[in-house]
Image 1 (cartoon, one colour):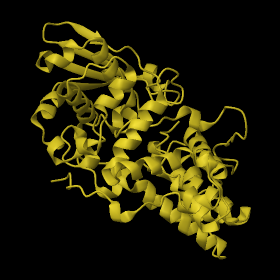
Image 2 (cartoon, rainbow, N blue to C red):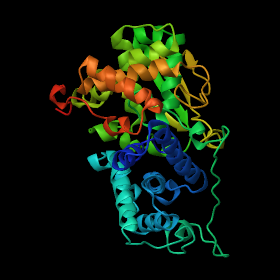
Image 3 (tube, rainbow, N blue to C red):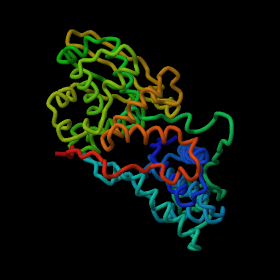
Image 4 (tube, rainbow, N blue to C red):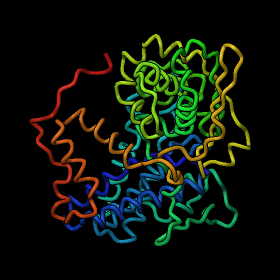
Length: 398
């Protein structure tokens, strides 16, 4: 199976709701789940990363299908739009390769979705793309996985009821970090909470070893990411992410009593990837202590069911600490212990307050949290706020 990617595609549903004026909040939420279901099932049966194709392709295909359905497109038009996108707009993983990642990498989902929606609009206006692209021998699916019988190399099973949805294997990021690092962050939090002496004097930490699975080992464990100098590279660098969390734990002087308090007290924000953070001597020093190991088949086979990771710390006196195997970190759909609402509420306020004053931020968050109660009319201004009250912040990139 390939990597799930991120839940970056929900604005497509809001756009359709605002264009049609006929999509209420409850229908919008169902459409968002459908986007996740389509892209998640595609991820399960066709690994884009294996063929050096960026994972946003599956989300773009899902976006075209759901946007078209909400806009009233015919099945033939949706098929033509997906075909048009697949043969004209496939993004390669070159956007994620190299020592430093670019701004366009951070916008990869948006760029591909923009192309998918453009294809859908063209198809609805009578400009049709190739049909039956999943069986097309020269499109990506059969080109990379040839089939002698002329069929598509996989079947897709979509759920319409019950609990067997692809989103139940995904997770919410509790702060800003690369998805694959969630297990390591949880392991680090568990270790620090159980062994607070590690926070009091991090100079006594000799080594932090992170054991993880593919694709995490190849993406954020890439040796080229050990010295990030841009935001996009830093949030795809396991050594930076873990070091920054540890630095927050040391500097904020909080010894949390609960997992939720730990996540909210040490949560990684945009400023943790700014110029000052990237050049912070303490963070850089901690980065030198981190090693990364591939756990092999024992770990690989557990993904994408979970995010299998172990964090091991060795102190300078030889004492060893281990988080044990982390499978379902806080935020993962299969995690049953974390108070997700409390952590997400903090995250929403943290990010929203960067742009909005407290009252306006609270109003916007409340509207989004209760989207299922919104009428089709209220969906028209779901993102509206007083732009004259936008907070002004100094650039974090120096």
